[in-house]
Length: 111
Image (tube, rainbow, N blue to C red):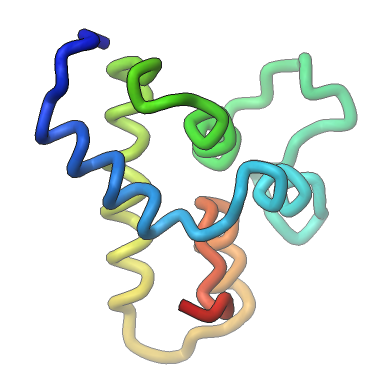
């Protein structure tokens, strides 16, 4: 990405970090559990398992200035998906929480 400040990207960066309330390490641990579903990391992370959760971990490990266009696309998708899931009517069950947590948002975490 260009190193010039982009207010749109800066705003997205902030929104992303507002909805992703788990740290990279917390999300890594979550993705290693069986409960996290298809985004689970394998015992050998070098196998390149794809998944939005894994992309979120990579973004959390980056500085804003190191974002790629793929990162920006992922961030937009995560912000939209988390907001959509949070807006869903009840029931907010374990499966709902697991979907959110696989994107880096723990809905039970205090604000």
